[in-house]
Amino acid sequence: MFKEFKEFALKGNLIDMAVAFVMGAAFTKLSGSFIEDLIMPLIGRLTGGVDFSNKFIALSEAVTATSLEAAKQQGAVISYGNFITISINFVIVAFVMFLVVKAINRAKTLAIKPAVAAAPPAPSAEETLLTEIRDLLKQKG
Image 1: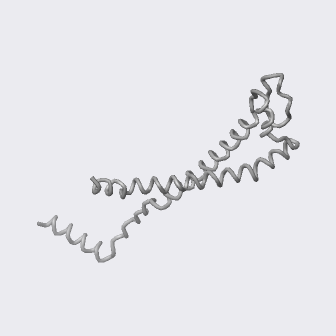
Image 2: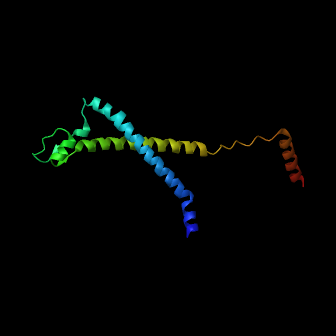
Image 3: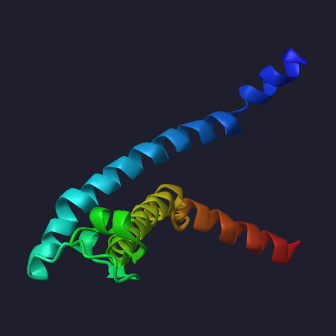
């Protein structure tokens, strides 16, 4: 049983999947920082300083707070600002992944591109002469 487990654990696919999982987790942190620290401040500046993370709709008259965290403590709220932020995050990550996959596919086609076969060289004068002699001998014989 241990031998079977060892074979399963050391298969290439499982190791590849583990590496992909770790790389995905690292990419998630990187893309999150890219969006939260670089993109969202630019979008906030373009929209006149709007902070999407604090945008919400109060579902109760008891909610009087101006920040999302305080409003959640007072009652039910719809935090549409979070949804906008996560939607922008998704679009940016999807676009970056599209560019990465496109670059990888392009690299694959360039690497696998078959070499164009060169046209065979024209026969030399000797070969042409020998071909003519052979044809003449076939006609006489």
